Length: 94
Length: 331
Image 1: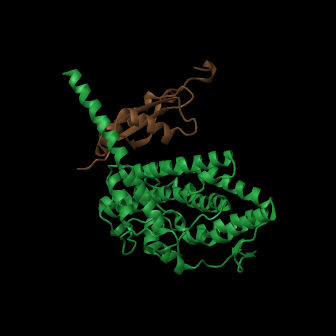
Image 2 (image 1 turned 180 degrees about the vertical axis):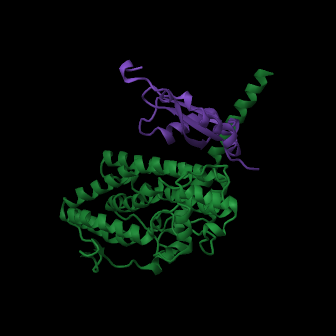
Image 3 (image 1 turned 45 degrees about the horizontal axis):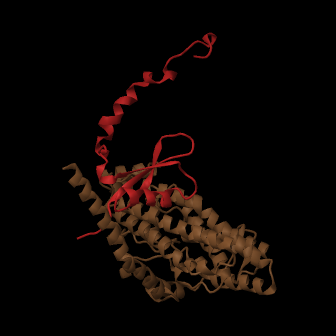
């Protein structure tokens, strides 16, 4: 039987009030140890003020083969970007 | 380098026209500078080569802790001790980033450890040399980490996403390693005659093994050509070695130390140094397991794993107990 510890994904919130960001993964026997390990492996230089860990097995991901159907439709909807609309110079900043 | 002599299984490099449509599309993505991510389709050779390269790199970081760990309790000041401790801890971290990157390719952590402990997987030849004096810690940071940086900086742009991202973290930290080593050397080089002799002795012993880190000339190697086509290797071994010599020789002169190579001479025409070849017979002997410290390094690594088993099992038992209690409370 394999005694390998489960894999955890690590998310760190940086100093400047940004979202938690995925930084990598590690093995740990439970959530408490995963936080300890994450501190040692990913924040040795003050990289963060908060850590999230989540079991990798609990992450649901989109399939790479679905890249086209999921994301291509947005390509034709350029009007979702403000730069699509020309505003006359005399109107000023909008 | 930290990954030396990585085989690709390629008999020769194939052109786009010879590839089937799936492989051709893959190669075109790499040629366009796109990153390949886990779970995306990739040729089996690409996957296997990367597993070899990344695990070899990871093993080197882990085994690389041993020669330096030897001096943590004997560092000359408390500050040097704290710095060395931090550096060795970084090496452990680098190993862990890289093992995780390799795991995304479908090999387990336990399999990689088993390959290291059985001697099937290799690690860099450089870590099979002994650290005889404190100056060796300076020489390792300055030369060995300096050589590693030469190779790792371009790998930040390699085609495999998890490997490239691990390399970004590693490169940020590696610069500290090289500078602390150079600082140790510069203090010794400005010290007493005995200290200066110690620094020179360390340079004499680490110079050639450092040049061997880049591996033998691979200008005619199919494996090298295939790895370059896949963008998991960017420069030839000789090109990196030349770059390393050109950068390091002036630093040695600044320290007032002599590089132990009678053939070393500035070549105005090529804008770089001419230099001698390392003893490649020695290199192959070290790679084959017969360097000065191979057995000691591997034994120390196996002992650490075996003697830590009770602790890993204890943590697993504690995790199971807590999970069972939560289940009982919820029921």
